[in-house]
Image (cartoon, rainbow, N blue to C red; front, side, top):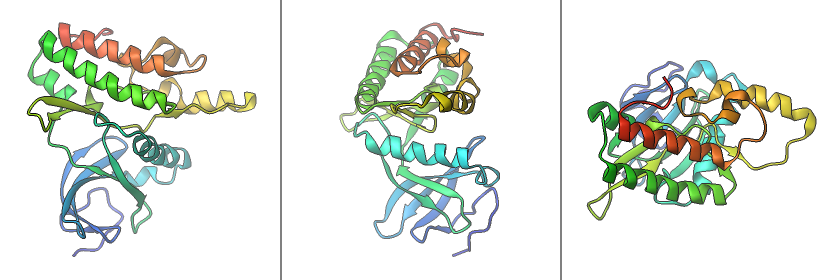
Length: 233
């Protein structure tokens, strides 16, 4: 199998962390790429998310990346993507291994179907809220909910279900020392959200962002599903 080189795209058949054989790239964003891979020992398909090489030098970004694994793995819900492993590749880039999903994001659905019918909208939002209830009960706020982070797939009962993805901006309920508050807001405040779905307190970088920010985002998505346009232009 080919050796892993420190390059942006990982070729098929590359062995990652000694156990994941890359099959293909399935997605790429500004911070990371996602690959379909096979767990060699288990013969199981997984999705491996690898941080972009140019961001691996940033300690803040690294912490945020591993926070995603910690947040998703700490919440057991059928409506939150299951994370099974995390670590570093041979070239130092961090990775997260999670369940492989077949379906489409809510963003893809919105692009394909301009206005989503009320019954489907209610089901999608309701299932997302069930997942969020578990996360919030565990003291975790997602903080970057948007259609791209809601994955729609077929459940075992033949009905559509959802998985919440990308806890990279998740915030754990932890006491903040007064002298750290300004730094935290600058680092993790309005700059790192998605404006169309951000609550006013996130946009302003004021106060404590709690579970209500996630509820705001769900309301924005429900509005967009039903009307075919975002709350904010």
